[in-house]
Image 1 (cartoon, protein in one colour):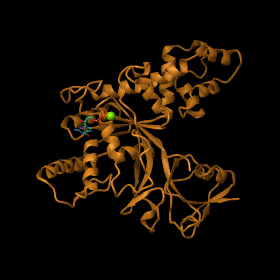
Image 2 (cartoon, rainbow, N blue to C red):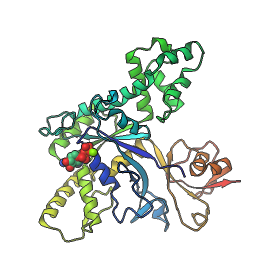
Image 3 (cartoon, rainbow, N blue to C red):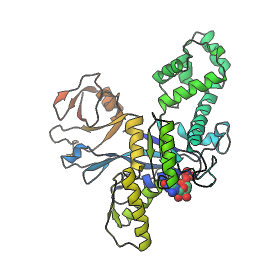
Image 4 (cartoon, rainbow, N blue to C red):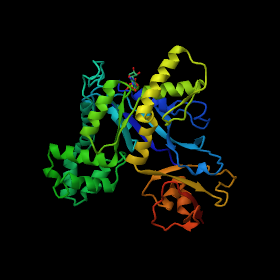
Length: 399
Ligand SMILES: Nc1nc2c(ncn2[C@@H]2O[C@H](COP(=O)(O)OP(=O)(O)O)[C@@H](O)[C@H]2O)c(=O)[nH]1
Ligand SMILES: [Mg+2]
């Protein structure tokens, strides 16, 4: 099976990226059975939470996901990209090395210190004294400038190709952006949005490279904002400012620190907590100090509907990327694989995928031998160009 969806966590130093990553990937006994192991210190397995899973109504035997009291958690790969500082695209700090990390992920979560208690390079300052809007601007500009610098490399060659060899500019740009996960539709649309569809490459100026890069990145690599440190009063202020400044963006209030504390407490048996819930239950003996910390966390969760960590990952996968969860089975009566495992797998795929694309995701050979697919719960055959839908249990019929 192809690799998991990758989600990169980005942001300036001290915004809370590693805390977010540690919380989201923490292997507590309940959420992490053996098959999921750490891949790399900075790459780990996190989860999206699926509440409306078909597992609710049948006893399932998950192989590649986890079920906790009727709630499913499907794995995604999280990448903790080390902190970006202004000028990273020019190689400042450990710049390009980190930007290269971003290549792999189709969606990014930008952890912003909404409380404004760190300056643009992550140094501690008085809470509320740094404007989180600046962090959003600077970081996205870093990413866009980096893409612009890739496009600008050997631009005279592009000019020659397009103007003298009459090659399609879309093709040439696609080649340049290869490995960044950008498709033809993204490049075509970005040229249009940037007003460059008809401008010859020899006439592109600085601003054009930037505009194109910005458009192609926004289209192909959406960024979810995690307004972190929401547990601090200044964090709430910052979150409100972000919401006002970016009414159309996906912004999730988060307290990564609270989530980490909850998962640690849960793994010690002190509390019962399903990641993504808006509350927890105390099950162990607590010291006065532990109780005070948990009481404070409970308040934050009540106010915001949870800690926001799982919500941010869900928003990245289901809202920003618009992926859907589908459940391939081989035996349509038992909803199982050929060994009798009921609903063994959850696949997270783009909402534009057809059943044949799903077959290719499972195995190239299955895609090649694909004949048709059946929506198991209705018994209906899917049309060949029909996109799959969230929650679909499907049987692929192959030669
Ligand atoms: N109050 C508060 N502090 C947080 C939160 N998340 C992280 N921090 C603190 O912010 C500091 C930097 O966190 P870290 O995860 O190392 O940031 P990174 O440099 O972005 O990886 C640490 O002292 C964390 O404890 C949060 O949600 N609330
Ligand atoms: Mg870190």
